[in-house]
Length: 130
View (cartoon, rainbow, N blue to C red):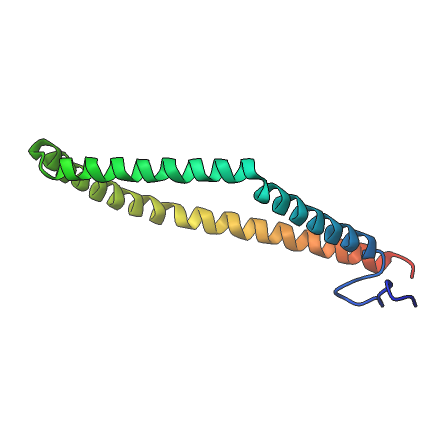
């Protein structure tokens, strides 16, 4: 057996070596592409611009929050919004409770279908000549 060949095991059945090698090669290529792209000065320039934009947005948000703290109309709106979210949260809890049995039934059906598919694959593997 050569150095590249591996013995057949449950975790690496014979015939999958090529697939595993291709995944390994793909991962290495993807890693090189990401490194090359990340190290490109144009990429670093874009990253710097994004950071600057995010800092500016954060500063604008901070300013808006400071101004809003002193606005009575906005404070009333915030209180109304809190009440609305509390009502929405309660309605959501009720909807989840009503949906729960249907979700459980659907998950059981999916689990059964998956188990049937697995049994089908297992029986095909057992039917193949060695």
